[in-house]
Length: 458
Image: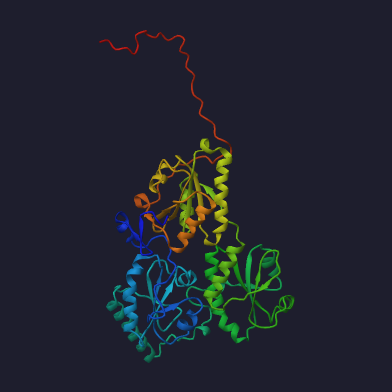
């Protein structure tokens, strides 16, 4: 995949002439390993571990770019963003979040496209979207205008305050209603008998650390509910009221967070206490305990659209005709795909397959059409970009293909027509070997053949 449309020069990978324009198209599908900024820049690199301390508990005005390393527009903004940070040094804080790597932060602030710039002013829980130009002068002007507004608000006594830990109910979309209140009466039914993963906070109302955790817990609960499709839950037990629960689980300090998984003894949560840390920990638990994604045959348009819309990537295999492989051969290919789906289940991608020649418009849109089966493509339906497997259709070949996608190596192209193609509705494969079509037999005994048939007269 690395070599397709690219050449190496001094250890770097450069697009060849026919692909040079393609490589410059907006935001591509794949990911890069490194971020845009280093310690020598005036841009502060932010992540779930330092965001609360640096930004939310700060009295400074912050200008923060949420970016993805694979995004072409983000790459174009980098020089101006560094220049902005240098110009505003000591006046306005300028930061950057790799929202691809730290998607919990991006989701927390409803980042849906890249780059997104937000202004964290008086009320750090409700940042404003920056709507100005994307050159350094325009950004500096926008930051100074926001700073002027912040100063005026403080002088008039309308400051939103900066002590985030005192903001009950959370911010950035968090809601107390998404934290499940657990009691002596409902704990076993909701937690132990649910078969799902729970993070449970045991707290005391008088505990200062518990009060500080409350908004973080609420915000994390909302994000986790959405991102795991309500498969991981955050709950809370008032241990001063429900002392039986606290005693059962040996709670001696507050807050104590425990992890409950089906059929296992509860374990202590060891992660950080910011919402970003909690979300990241919950997502790891979700992927570790989730079943591998289902491998679906493309039977109609709804199967393709739902899978590709619901997941960041949909991985599609086009397998040889059943007459070419038989049931055993096809099942071998499907087994390889299922193993890869298990291996990459933390990515929460969708997995699909179809038989060669059945969905010709799909094949044509991916440049597969008519040869080279089995084939595989990974589609990002939001950007209508795809990448093709260039190696072998094997565990090793597919693993290298998907690994390269995950770390930003490889090339992409636009889905033919810029949209998902028309899909034929078909019957599901019955799991059996194929059968040759029955041909009509012709009786030629009554046909008179001219002895001179096929001879030319001179």
